[in-house]
Image (cartoon, rainbow, N blue to C red; front, top):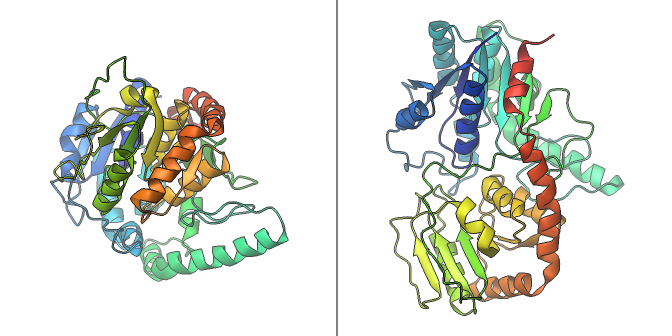
Length: 413
């Protein structure tokens, strides 16, 4: 039986390709998809076949490039967006459910309040994680710290302490959420992470082989495989290198959303300018209007470019370690130099290092340090070999992608 799904999301950079992919895969199964989001999303949503519903309060930006997260200033701003807006999200999600007779709600990780609306309306609810596991749990530390699991007594004590700190940060918004829940006759939470665990499904859109999952996994977790689609704004291959040029291609791809990354990109340009490589800088929407100093002809800068067309020719990717960029690099067997700037990027970079597929540096690394790291990656075949090994596993998981299957399971049993 065909269903009506409501996806609730906002612009968060790497979350957009998985959202669009989810829209398309549900439609291919014959379902109707509605999208509640910021007004700028209207044309893109309708182009991909969704019925668009604009937010009327708070999430009202009409210019896609406008940064409402501003987590580069203070990472706590992300939590304010996620939880401080819950009352607005619940109200407008309920209105959409009633108006369009929605059968199930799909909440973006960034808008967890939509789960409460679905709970109030007593319909199935799922959450899309457009990145690896983030929540604390057995045998893993909380996300956002960029650290690895440690399977011994010290690791378990560390993780218990870090989980307590994680709860303290999240639970700043717990009283307001519980007041909201009480108004609708719902039981209170002890910790705000229970909101995520209360979903009928948590669809984690990455490769389980790449991730450090909670073990044993919560019953509502479904690894659907990574979404490898390029961003909708990505252009065609902008540079055609001559066949005679045998220098390795190093691509700089550092965030499609604003993270105050101009100086990081500039340091990378200076690093490549002193190497015998072909350097290609892809700026993306956040940086495409910025001017950079290009001291050497071996480095070229373009506004945007499709990773699918560039990465197969690359020998190294310098990146902020956004999940989509990391996945697309590894499925092509390309090692990475990671300069995480926030969000899930530190965790992704730690996983790249764990799998031996690259190097992690601070976002404040100098051009000299970056140059030495690139040289190390290019001169050591093990990085490429390890990228190919984990990339093969990621590709297999991507080919088994099962978002629609997971969502349809909400109506079985």
